[in-house]
Image (cartoon, rainbow, N blue to C red):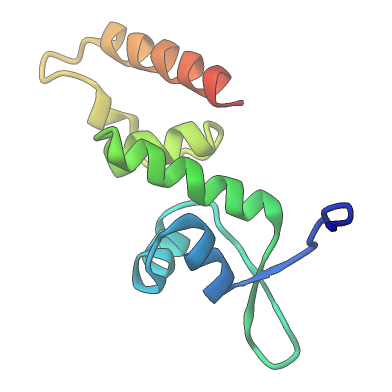
Amino acid sequence: MSGPKIKRLYYSMNEVCEISQVGAHTLRQWENKYPLNPAKSQSGRKLYKPSDLEIIKKIKQLTRQGYSETIIHHILDPNDHSYPEEKFISKKGDKSILHEVRQELMEILELLS
């Protein structure tokens, strides 16, 4: 007999690694590259919210689909301009390419939401 599923407020790094099938080393790298900010317990252990777990799953999916770090970063946080837009502009300076890429990213973001 099983009761109702209890919703967790936080997950440990080991639990996140097990659930997402992402190694701890990779997870630490992603914390530096993407908008992942796990909380810390009083003992210094990282605590991930369910929303963090969802972001990790999205990163894994997008990585497997072959998206670059820059594209993934823009999908996860389109308002963060720490990645220069010049990476999306052709050598001729054609800004229409940037517009097309942004449109595609917004469509992908809507699909993922």
